[in-house]
Length: 119
Image (cartoon, rainbow, N blue to C red; front, side):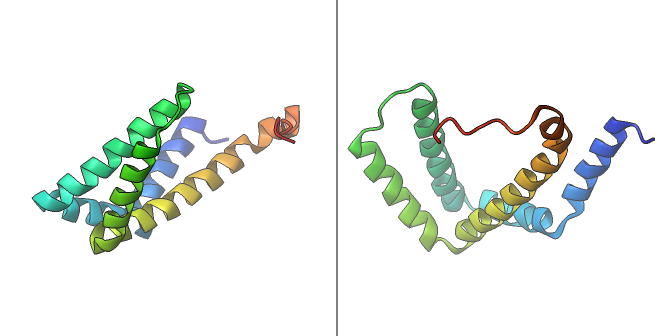
C-alpha cells in the first residue's frame, strides 16, 4: 500500500501540472506584472477578506461596505485578465472541493454524513 503522504504529494504535483493551475499562474503573473492591474486586484482581495472576517466574527456588514464591494466587483468584471483569473479560480475551487469530498468519503462512510443544521 502506498504511503498516504506520498499520495498527497503526488496529488499536489498533479494539481500544479493541471492546465487550470498553469492558466491560473499565468494570469496571476500577468496581473502582478502590471501595476494598475495589481492595485485593482489587491484592493478587491482586501475588501473580500475584510468582509469575510467580519462575517466570521459575527459583525454586521454595512450597506456602504456592500456597495463598495459591488463597485469593485463591477470594475473587476470589466478587466479581462482579472475576470479570467476569477473564472479559473472558480474552476480550481470546484476541483479542490471535489477532491475534498473524495478524501472525506471514508470518514463519512464510517461516521455517516452530518445532518445540515439548517434543515
